Image (cartoon, rainbow over all chains, first blue to last red):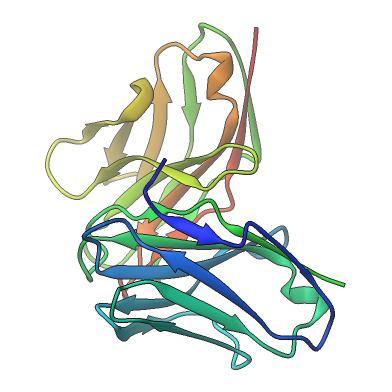
Length: 114
Length: 112
């Protein structure tokens, strides 16, 4: 158990809908990273927050957004969903902001868009 | 731009034999390299990392990795494979923004 929790575990929704994925980092970790894992794209970095502030942005679509709250949990919002958004979404946490520390991954949320 | 390559989609090994999972990298500057393992329907688990220092890095579950600067490689190794080592293995490099840039993954299959 990495100490990172993600809810829900599975999510099935329809095209055009909006969903929210939630992540709680390990105790004491200030950084939260979001990644998308799909068969065709592999593991892709979406966005990073550090202590409530956005720190880095990767291949995140404009339809997607995220935030980190004062208690350090993070939410990833996916809107106007398309079939191609079906994937496994992971969050990871680490102690620092710079990426030198290992990242600890949650179990993921499997999103299925029908 | 930083990148990693895992040239083998799958590696098959007999239990008890040594295993190697290959990874090569491309970075500007000093690389920060990581290995992760993913079991079915699970998140990624950290195995080991290379930041600086000794070229042979020891990690979890008896795994180690050898950093070779001249060959830009960071191969994962284990002296004696177990059936329970069967999983998907990812090599990663720290990106310019601090995120991890992952390879495509290598499926390791260890047969009894």
